Image (cartoon, rainbow, N blue to C red; front, side):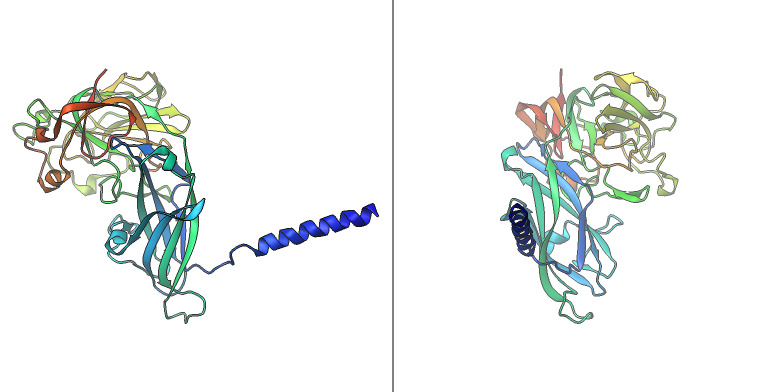
Amino acid sequence: MKSEKLWFIVLVVLTLHAASRNARADDQFTPVVLSPLMPTTNSVLGTDGKYHIVYELVLTNARPVAATLKKIAVLDARSPSTIFAAYEGEELLARLRTLGNTAAGTAEIEFNGTRLLLLHLVFASRAAVPPRLLHHFELLGAFPGSALTTPTPGSYTVTPFDLTSQGLVIGPPLAGKHWVALNGCCEAGGVHRNTGLPVNGQIHFAQRFAIDWMRLDDQGRMVHGDPSDVRNYTSYGADVLAVADGTVVETLNTLDDQTPPKLPDPKTITLQNVDGNHVVLDLGNGFFAFYAHLQKGSVTVKSGERVKRGQVLGKLGNTGNSSGPHLHFHIMDGPSVLGSEGLPYVIDSFTLAGQISAEKFAAATGVEGDWSQGLLAQPSPRRSQFPLDLNIIDFTP
């Protein structure tokens, strides 16, 4: 009797398990296959008081019919009816890139073709950030039931993407007032945000959260006098600081300054010299800090050396692929300056001193002129935030 009862229980369990499996959504042919470029990321609190999530999806057309994207929506995995963002038409095209970092130009993806979708989500509070996302796609493609030469409409919800709470808090990479965060986060058209590079067999967005720091003088100028003289730039020669305790893993200290405001001949640029004289710090726990374009002979540390937060690492210069003296700074998940993934971070304490007009900056032919119109009458102290594009920041003790 006990044996019969045991078998009956096993039979019921197996039946319920089978019913559960059959209750799942049916498997589906998906003409365009998708995957996140990173396994996970975390939100970062910007100076706008909002939480930003920045990531990419890789889209490949796996069917022998051209696929045309119609709409892509980002959903809450806990409640897929909740839509955080939806892109179609021009909004979709603005985020779609080729592997060569050019605008895709069209929503059509050829057979075996691959595109990158650059995403940026904004949430009003940390509580509003979900632990996991889903992605809903509507497109024309080679769905079952259609001729292999005729695209038909279809849709599917796929590609779960986890969000973590892990973040990095650092100190400032520079000291003093009126530092401008150029080419910063987070829109798809940004110079750094828009650059995915094929390094060591993978596409990497090492500069996902990179900032180019330039400084205003007391008259609001980034440069005065002849712009071809590096010494006429307000930021030139500034001390570059360790943002945390760490270990130096790489330095370069031998390259001469470029003559601004022109970029060097592209034929002379390699992975070894593109960032000029530089320092890479291992901050521990998978975080690495990168400082680029330093002055020749100014780097004061060497590989293997332990450094303390606030220690001078070198001086701001104009070496490598640079058109004017600035500090390029980013945090990444490995020691390779371009073969790693750029990671979000916050700076523990600074003052938001102003904001340069994006329209004015886009219309300018250079950095000459007076940019003081963006300064705030009452600067705003900030803690554990990430500077956003064209913010004017004071790094003070």
